[in-house]
Image (cartoon, rainbow, N blue to C red):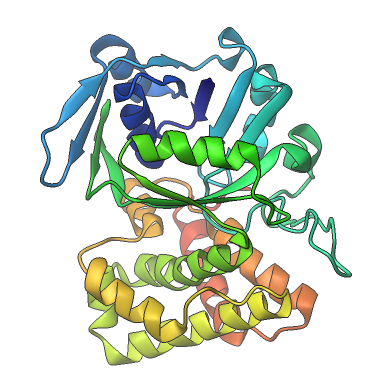
Length: 328
């Protein structure tokens, strides 16, 4: 079984290190100083409460050297993915499965979704249809990750624990390819589950991303600081309520309530900085359109009003544009 992780940053590096430690044939696509250190010294994973370890996975910036894979796990920032599709082609054989482990609405969301919008293409995520046409929705499975991780130095990933993965087919079937991937991920200590209605889990993740990501970047606040401010918490709840209504309009109400999502964050994520805030602090491009813009796009398509999301999107777009961090 050959696996390539396309994007060996925080999420991809965390998984890559754990798979490599289990002796699974995994290759990493990385770049820059991070790649140089992995190639020279290996990839180090530091986990809360556990001994750090270093592995020597195959790592490259040239996917053409790897050949066709059984699985390609895309763990890029969602705005980066369309520009990398051509480089993915050498990895894609006739039976290759592509797992999308990225934030926001996946580009394949409407594939095999019965109803008036079946096969609709999400412009905020895949503006020119590059991923739909270049990868093919028939290859795609969903992969939702809950892992608190960051790259703290080139070649070094730090995480707060093992994490959870939800994996599923667009049509909800329990396929062999999803079961095999979940089995491999479970070997690493990550808890991986195959879901029969992954879109409900997607909307739960989108609920948190759409609320905490832009609000954290606009306020420079951690999750705890946001939730400890009653007025900010009220705005987060409004955003989450709008996201819930969008998911419901497509027959996929989030798998938990707004109250549960808030309280779960209060228990588990208080010191956490949203990924968008981390990008802002590091001067990196921000997933504005791909996270908040996509939620608004799907709301408009379904006729669901999103006044709070619209306001936050306008503000965070301006913040990103002024900082030179809004992808074209």
